[in-house]
Length: 91
Image (cartoon, rainbow, N blue to C red; front, top):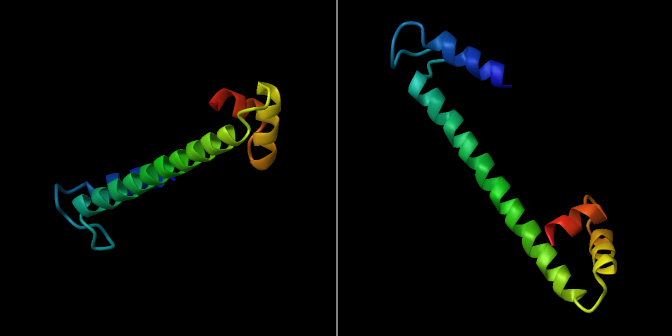
């Protein structure tokens, strides 16, 4: 995926700044679109991380009276993509 972006940027930047490539998109527009995609991906990552952290905190409070290892086991059992180790490292 990165190589296609590099190829697109290098193929369209041959004649100078602001010239359009075969698709009629200028270099600035192409870079702007790439930047927007990166910002959207970063925003999604941050939102997912925040939701996951809040989910872990809620479950941690739910099982606060349990011993540590049992708490981690119960929390990990409710999260399909997390292991007990993952939960223990995050809590």
